[in-house]
Image (cartoon, rainbow, N blue to C red; front, side, top):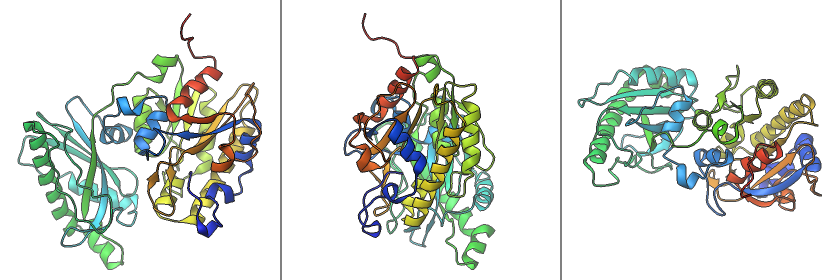
Length: 401
């Protein structure tokens, strides 16, 4: 949601331009600040940012994105398995990437493609599971003996570049074996996708074909203590993005499914707000995540990003009106800055505001990047948020005697 000032908005950010009375109400009644999810100037991934927001030192516990994406999609990742975050993408005959998201292919088309890919046979003893999640996103899990997460990505992470060969990142035979298996599998995927009726139909309709799978983020489940273990709380997650659900699941949080929650700009915002209010009736903590602002930024869609911020503001209005302000704390923030100009995650700090009983209110009256920088929280780290909230809830333990 956070962004940089842009010329098209008279050198303001989308948060500064959007009509957001509920966001501003939290700023006026609470304490504000800015936050570096990892550290100043370090662009965070959605995985490391989410870990940080839940109080974990991502630099120490991060073990790759793929496994988090997998468990968030209800795919088991066992010890020794290697999981990857994947994209359906479009390439030309020379395997140069034309569209890393295959035109944000619809879930229905992606599911048909994934079903066909699951039928691919490998020569080795390794088995695999491939599953689409939201639009172009998918998960791949390799299962077998002597596998390693020490392999590179096939995703060049930019258009106009050729798909990368997966290479071992150390000299172990396991890494070499894993890289060979993955290269073989991805070539076979490409052959199936090139001939698939879904892609032939997409080409006829002038849409980019989803004719290759790009992999990145080889990983395993992080070894972390759950939030219930650390703080003795019951916690829930309301999210559509598989990655965020995976992080929350690893943190011991209950995942709440919401009809109409898609992880896209077309998600049912109010259904997620209502689910959050219900969750707070039985849980100490509810983590509500909205992906849509990030998608708009990656697409460079200024008007859509502003509109989504205003829809999130309506969600917040519902939550404020349907929870007890005398006993409930509400924190609003962003898990990273995504620039409309570059389309990338950036290392700029994000705004944060916390309201609730006995908060040391500051003088900030608007929720945006520049206003919140003047607040009483000053500049904090992502991993500071959970201890702050748990202290407010009376769940923190004293350090020392």
